[in-house]
Length: 233
Image (cartoon, rainbow, N blue to C red; front, top):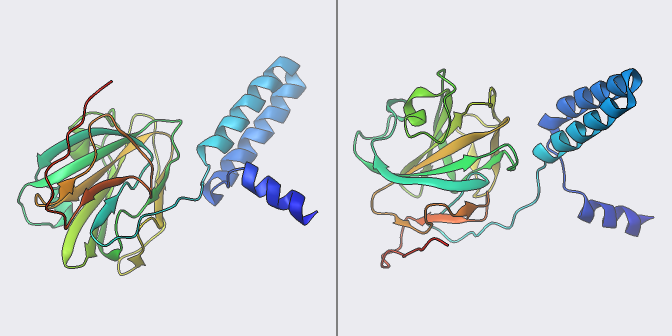
């Protein structure tokens, strides 16, 4: 029996506790739909399976070398640019490198800390629900911003709501110390994460690259190596 349970744990991806209420709602809706008309019950079953899939929370293997900045989200790197961080971060009003990771509704939406460090600030800002892929979503959309101090360097991490996302969930508070890859929040149903690092950091990803939260290295705060080159296709 123990072997069977262990095998099941390896096959089925864990589900984050934030998803349980939505799964129960989907199950209840499925029962009602099946009672009304059996084909609708199959539609409800597919919906329930998708809700379980959306709230999955798989374990990750995180690189721990000092200076590495790992992706806080699953998704696609859709923007690498230079920008002044949002005013609410209270970072110096100087350009920083901004790396944006866009999450669609099929990506895992559990967010993980990009570095090991102490949370200096958390500020929630209400706003619009524009397409999170747009550049102006960084300033106009509803968002939750964190400043994390790591080895004397302050970086910004901003959870941005999107067209479908209507709820940003935070698991942490000011003063908490996070380890690289540790869970700090979740955004429901499609959105984006912006990461602000110093201009001196070496960017280690390319546009369009698929990022895995807690595993993919976005940048190195300490490296002095030549910039990496990427190609599409």
